[in-house]
Each structure stands twice: as C-alpha cells, then as structure tokens.
Image (cartoon, rainbow, N blue to C red; front, side, top):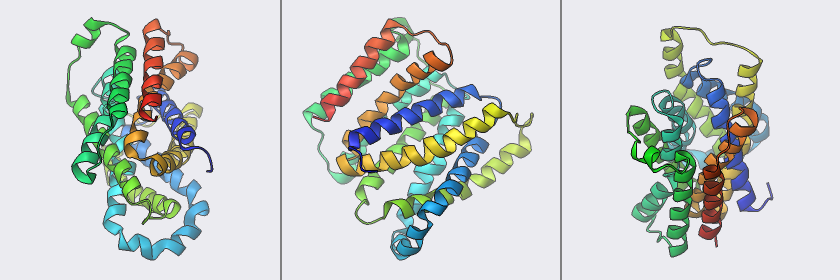
Length: 291
C-alpha cells in the first residue's frame, strides 16, 4: 500500500469505527469471544493465499523473534478487540469509548518508559485538544454527564484492552526493521485464533441461547474479518512504522468521530452540536500533533 501514512491511519480508524457500530448492531446475536474467533479465522483464510509465500521465505527470521511474535498475537489479535467486546457487555458505550481515547496517553507513557522517546510540546497540546474533543462528543457538552461517569468492571476491562493495543503498536514500530510485515501478521493471526479457541468453546458450551444466524450476522462477520481486520491492521501497521507509535496513536481519537457519523447515517441516531464541535477539536488535535 503506497499511500501516505496519514491516509492509511485515517482509513484504519474509519474501518474500526464501523467495527464498533456493527458490534453494537449484533449485540445479543453472537457472543463476544466467538465473534472475535470467527473474525480472525476468516481473516486468516483470506490472508493466507496472499502472505503464505512470505512466511516460507521469512520463517527463520520469525523463529528468531518468536517471543515477540507471540506477544503481538496475544495483544493485537487475541486480546484487544475481544476485551472490548466483553467490556461493552458491562459498561456503557460512552465509558468504553472514553477509555479507548486514552490510548495515546498510554503510548506516550510506554514510549518514554521503555524506549526513552521524549514527547514534544505539539504532541502534548494536540493530545489534550483531542481528548477534550472526545469528552465533548461523549458527554454531549454536558458537565453533568461528565460528573456522573462511574467506573465498573467493564471500564477496567476496556482499559486493559487499551494497554494491550498500546503494547502492540509499540512493538510493531520497534521491530519493523527486524520482522517482515506480511508474514508476521499472518502468523500472529493464526496464533491469536488458536489462543481464542478454548475460550470460545467454553463460551459456546455455557451460553443460554444459541447464535442467531442471519444475513446481518454473516455480513457483520465478513466486515470485521476482512475490512476491520486485514485492511485496517495492515494500514495501521504501515502508518505506525512510517511515522511512529506516538504520532499514530492520536489518530485513534478519530474513531468516535467516525462512529458518530456512522451511527447517525445507518442507525438513525440524532447528531448533536456538541458532537460536531468535539469532532472538529479531535481533528484539530490530530493535525497539530503531526506537524
């Protein structure tokens, strides 16, 4: 993908925003662990004929960095979206989206702690502006809504998911010159799916109602398995490698902006002035951070 890194990062967040909306649309029709497993099994089947030749070529290199590949599979494939799917069962979508917007903060902390990467003034100011914009969107500009936020087990689960994604993004950047992209991604998908299998089996064995199969459910699996997995991840990884995890992380704050647009268009939700103002602040923060 020979596109500018900023375009790739915007595309990734756009597709992930659609993933959030679709996830809400099929809540109760398919359990979270099984949805995550089906997502990555489909992604593996689609990506296998594209990337297998690279795996054969790069296998020795992958074996040399096996522990890192395992961590990539655990954090980016098996854990992040699975934890988000589980978290929204226990918390509101407002709280979950707010927790997800903390990703740039964790990226800065981890980058400074482990890679000794300093945070620039523009990054700090841009992140603050974007977070204020996200808060404006999520609270609809109401101080009362902000004050009434409460933390529960779902919030904590989403925070763990955000930390997993931050670790994944940092490792993608740190090992970009040592681990080949396509082959590493295919292997991590396969390993992540294997990690999810026993949990999904337990979920299916203990669930009270069966999966509701329909055109909507199948379409959702196709979307999250191809667009939100393969296309979005490859776009994100390429963008992170090019401009760095710190600068790329701020783009994740575009997710609630795009999700608001999708929810308005496809789910018929009302668009508020606070969401427009907040969206402009988020975009302004992204631009400032990447100056």
